[in-house]
Amino acid sequence: MGAREAGTAVWRLRSRGCWDDAAALLDAAARGEPDAALLRAELLIEQCMFTSEGWGRAEEALRTAESLALDDEQRGAAACERGYLAYTATVLRVRDRADEARAALGRAAALIAPDSPGRPLLDFRRGLMAQHVGGNPQAAEAAYRRAHNAALARGDALLASSTWRHLAALALDGGEVAEARQGFAESLRLREETGFLVGVAPALVALADAAPEAEAARLTAEARRLYRLLGGVPRWLSERLAEGA
Image 1: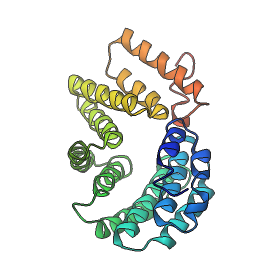
Image 2 (image 1 turned 90 degrees about the horizontal axis):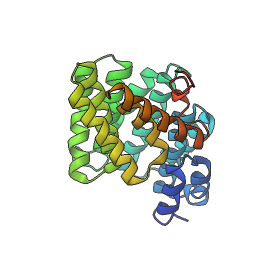
Image 3 (image 1 turned 135 degrees about the horizontal axis):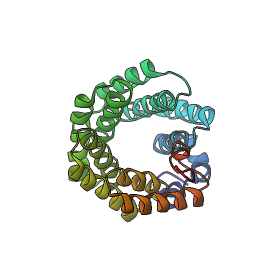
Image 4 (image 1 turned 60 degrees about the horizontal axis):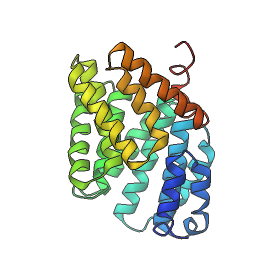
């Protein structure tokens, strides 16, 4: 099963946090098809972000994708994934790989054309680095905004859900509660509409941060229910969703 043919089945599994099963659908194709190899690496890297586990498998899958890349677009996409894997390890405090993340994302920027479909995701990830590693919210906002506008223009609902959320978080940090609430609500709406179930709990928690007390309690309770339903992912919500938190 190639990457294209596996698309619907992979999405169903991925959206419910079944990354191992989704990756397994691509095992055969990923040994020789660049697109399948890259998609498999993406799935396993996302698993690392949500579970803080599986680093070795993700690294192996990424090396395969890098070895199969045939052109600058594919090499740039693989570099973008390497940057994200290194970023994830850094922000989850598994290992400081910030220099590797910066270098890989810089390499991706040199390889991916400005009008490429892969550019918005790259911009978003460079925004993550600027905000959460570099401590530069202004640079992060500019990168998020580029990614956001492109995601909306291209109809990339999943990426738009992430850009809405991160722009809203910056707005909340700046005291713009109404703007933040709108952004968080849009992020939640898109995740629900696309069926990205594993991403709904974080969106609920984010919206709770900008909501009145009674509504915030309801949103947090719903996030807790989903968190348990999905086996306790994402792991980084564990303290926030503990009873009595």
